[in-house]
Length: 168
Image (cartoon, rainbow, N blue to C red; front, side):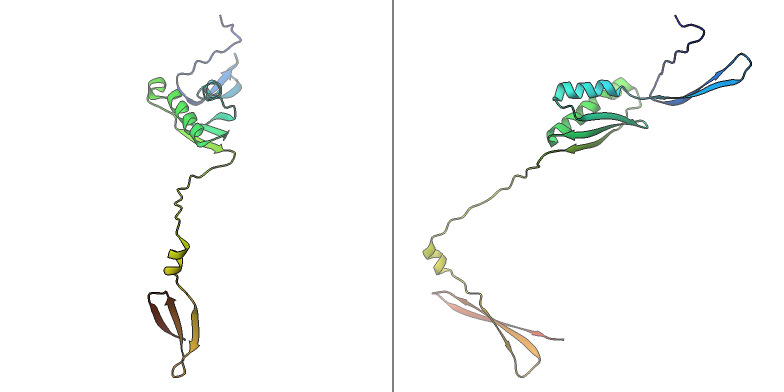
């Protein structure tokens, strides 16, 4: 039973409001700001229990739910977000489902999987297709341009390619 000096507030939805208390002379005695948020402590406990991690904190920001902290890997980030979304599903919250904001950091060392192809070649084949990229830079005497000569030497053929560019 509530005494005449007590107040009981029963929220119906997530949000905020204020409560004004008057005395018998109709003077304002107190103004209380009341904020109703989702049950964050229970979600924190469930994440710690189900996923086995204790570094996740759950906070409220407006009508949203914020997950923050550090987790060991990206898989646990996704699992924590899935748990939070299930916790605040439309069936439990009515029409107003809070958005889940991810501020979780992945700690530790991140690994990247690379696909590597290793090719082996015999030394004889390497000599057969050898390429000599020696370049000779020479000045042309008849015009102020530069000339480069590239030669590719292989036992089967010798090719020389020349390129000219104008200097400004």
